[in-house]
Image (cartoon, rainbow, N blue to C red; front, side, top):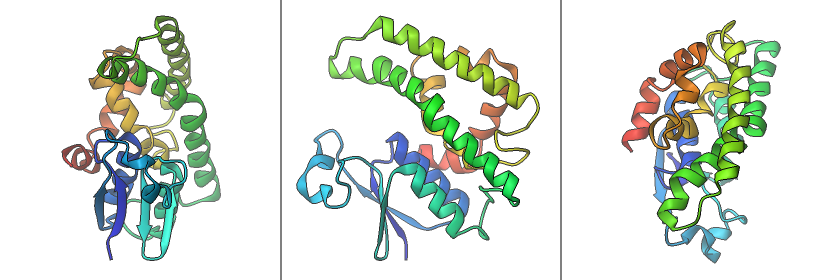
Amino acid sequence: MAVKVYGAAYASCARRVLACLIEKGVDFEIIPVDLLSGEQKKPEFLKLQPFGMVPVIQDGDFTLYESRAIIRCYAQKYADQGTDLLGKTLEERATVEQWLEVEGQNFNPHIYTLVLQLLYFPKMGVPQDEKLIRESEEKLGKVLDVYEERLSKSKYLGGDFFSLADLTHLPFTQYLVNDIGKEYLIKHREHVKRWWEDISNRPSWKKVLQL
């Protein structure tokens, strides 16, 4: 039975989940949610996700939301199938979890602000906050300096293997490099650039971008 993924294939957090499912070789079906019309805020959808956000998955009788929780779930559920995204030892798994937390707590807030301000606000006719853009860009640069140091010693964030720690960065870094004119933040850091070129060229991510 295919996993039902409620959302839009272009939505960043849905893309995070789809990349994981493809890496694990899990069959899925995208159930479109019209984000532009606000379908995710309507009572029927709120029964699935009370905060009105995507994605949500349904796997038989099991329903789960929050993209990072979903990818953790399926990386573990199908641990013996597809790409090992968690690591084999306790220490490897702990390191992967550490960098998942770094992405969520340190990387994502600043890159999310930049994408919102530079990509979506102009489309919505919302004024940009230039001060906030500058501050977010500066803060993201400092985070990426930490990444540069880490990746000078390790092929991937979690170690010498591709993992959820890397996969979780794909959706918003795609915007950073290709859509909002801030690609220098990646390309001017030797090891971060090498890492991004590696993970963004994985077949799973290329498939996601084609959905």
